[in-house]
Length: 290
Ligand SMILES: Cc1cc2nc3c(=O)[nH]c(=O)nc-3n(C[C@H](O)[C@H](O)[C@H](O)COP(=O)(O)OP(=O)(O)OC[C@H]3O[C@@H](n4cnc5c(N)ncnc54)[C@H](O)[C@@H]3O)c2cc1C
Image (cartoon, rainbow, N blue to C red):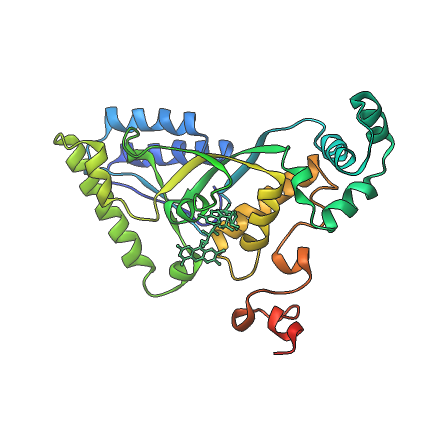
């Protein structure tokens, strides 16, 4: 069992034996949706709501999963072709493709460095993200140049959802109270569902800590912008972890495009945060001499 995971359960021996099965499943398959759904059926059949099982995912316990499930093939070749289309008089696509094949990666790196990012907008990256809180998914979906498909709380019963506990709270004197309240809200949720309240209404009692899963798609330019603000130290730990994992994934398939990607200061060399800057590099105001 991974460090930091914890399960609240009822007192019966049945729940105790289930506890082992459930935690092993979670750890082996990292919150795989189908497997969790099977667990859910199991709970519904055998346990009344007063024998509630909730998995608490403590911050840093590794349940966040970010997987690059699809991407535009030959992404860097397409970007080179787009660059050549912009900068050459050539209008024979075959010739342009041939030229692109022999263009060094440095050619692409330089165009990106110069900020001509439209040439990488033809490349899409599709991620599966799970084990994150609704708090963070709300931050994620604020990105408008992106597409999202998120697990519905109207249609999916929240019985087997994971709840996130930030380390900060876990270590504080509020840890226990926090987990108790989550437990209570989950109990009330179950009670309402069992008494016929629709999921779409019962879900109002679920906390921001409730876990969710999404498919997220962005083009390479949108990703670079996303990394700039979300890998920045000013960003919150959960979305920063997602952004860092995404960057790790896309670097494997498009190394030149994402070579310099990262926090704003890493990509642009200065900090736009001014008073909130972490001090790693000069702020825009400092550069202006203000
Ligand atoms: C540290 C941090 C704190 C934040 N705090 C808050 C907060 O307290 N409250 C809050 O509401 N949001 C907050 N946000 C969200 C933020 O305001 C953006 O909505 C979000 O980060 C999406 O970034 P974006 O607009 O650059 O990207 P996208 O939404 O992908 O947009 C990309 C670009 O398209 C252009 N664009 C998109 N839509 C429009 C439009 N309607 N009009 C003109 N240009 C447009 C802009 O140039 C924009 O940069 C925060 C973000 C960060 C990183």
